[in-house]
Structures are given as structure tokens and as C-alpha cells.
Image (tube, rainbow, N blue to C red; front, side, top):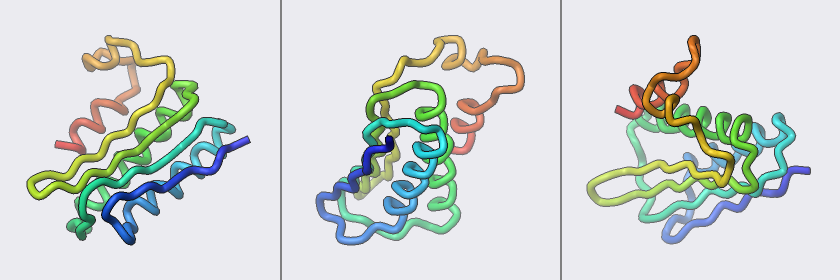
Length: 123
């Protein structure tokens, strides 16, 4: 059974991006029948992102969450959104089984370009 997620924030009253990521994470976890704990943590003072940037961040988070729930067999998954004066950071962490170093080097299986595509999108 899926455990309810927790949306934690420090100085943020409302954050639509965090809510959207929390919602899609819950949907992915339910579809994968994954019982991992899931939470979204927001640090810093939320600010509006350019719509194109916001949409790319959302897509990256969605793909990273899909990979985590589908392939890592985690007990917990966390998304961290950090707003800083000079940067924005999205971090997706899990305590799953890890990833083959060949995949991390970009030598993944034929036809599987998830991490490579995510790197290009992040850049």
C-alpha cells in the first residue's frame, strides 16, 4: 500500500511546482504499486520560474521519479527543491539498489536514453 507523501517546506507558503511534483510522484508510486515513503522538501524562498524552465523541471522530476519507483526498489524517495539567490536545484534521491556504472557513463542499454536525455534537458 502506498504511504502518503509529505510536503515539507521551510519558508514557502505555497509552491505550485512542489505540489505538482508531489502529485505526480504519488501517481507514479501508485501505478508501480510501490510502497516507498515519498516526500517533497522545499528549501529557500519560493519564486516564480519562467514557464519553460518550470515545465522542464517538472518533466525532469517526473522522469527521475518514474525511474526511481520503477527500477530502484526503494524504501524511500525524496525530491528536494532548493531556491537560492543565485541558483535553483532539483534533487531526486532514493535508497534503492543503485545504478550500473556503465549506465552512468552513458554506455547504457541500446534504445535506453533516459539519463542522457535528462542530462541534456538539465543543461
